[in-house]
Length: 543
Image (cartoon, rainbow, N blue to C red; front, side, top):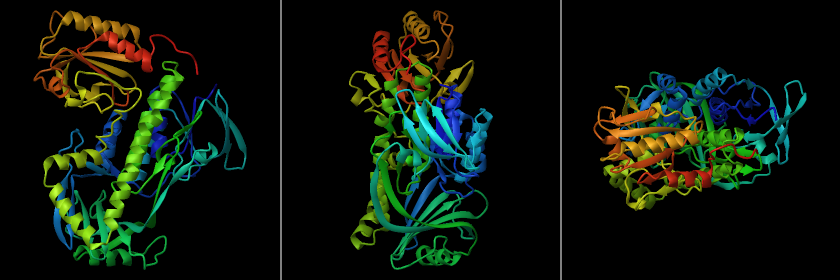
């Protein structure tokens, strides 16, 4: 089949999926019905886990240069701050939230896609599809009205909450509407608020949140609208000035609005993430309240999760049932977000005096404890997203539930290691187009055993897995007869964080999550896992 993947929708999710497939050696076709990219800011927050992905793609530095860093959030009631959430202590080399307009995120991703020789076709609309066991035939409509029949092995709908692909594939999309209306504006303000913190103001007349934007005195304001007030779709500046005065207790002059909008909350999720050879991702999979800023980041992780699996199947390096894990892993993430953002939205707009009392005092009490702060910020930053219950991860680790080291299905820790006499971040030396096996020597390593295991794995999986031996110390032992990758762990910090007091192994997936771990390092158990779950020593049956 000439075309492996057709992606419908060139928003952030579709762009990242296209880029990552291309980096895996699969050239997709990417279409979008809009004649031009979006010019409005829309989703602003880019969290640490997304920045880790951007770093893998080589675009994190440009994104950071174009945005502004946010290190925390101040929460006020009747003009007085009662709680502060600090973001700068999260377990990532990106200890902040990046405020970056979605239009800029899309521009940076589009440049990456084009550099990988994938052309974004605009305006080309998807209309219908038919599929069989071998592929999908999509009907596309071009600007001149001409229809095209496009045949692809796989079709991915990244076309938003009103997805035409989802509807054509017969996927249900159910949920609830939250009875709350909000207005938003990107504008300038002369108030004396810290430009590196989000500000949230509760008051008797409602809630108002202010988010720093790149550039001097640039802010986004979001406020809930009382039910007795009728506003147009693009509210005028005056209403934001009024809400700011009433709810913040600040003397501020607002001006130069570049975008205003009104929106309500619709919570929706698909009944399945896949119908045969059709998948959905991003808002086409689930849409939820913008409270917490999780939407775009979640869509990007959908794409990052699906890309490596689809690439392995297309290249006949894994069986087709590997793709079943996409729903098993991403659906629970979306369901949790729908539940948590619904609860948060209702709590924010609640005017009941008892709820307001609990909101203030519980928030103040909870955020005064460092472990609670860390839990909140790691969750918001999407570092706590895990696939521990996935059918394609496995833990052969004694009393794994007691272990504080990362478990199978969790995000691999990004730790400094030494390679060729220089320190580097682990994430920077592990390519995201392969699996990586970390063989930890432990405190009393057997160099012969480590080398034999490394050679056996690389010889049987030369294209799919790269092996790295990790040793405590500052020099490569002369007794280690292994010409492949070696990471030195001078202070033993990497061994400690990974719980490798004795010989251990961690298989890390291309998306940075741990597929398998064992202690002691047992190559036969690893082989059994690979055979059972998804990878094979030789070619697998074609899809």
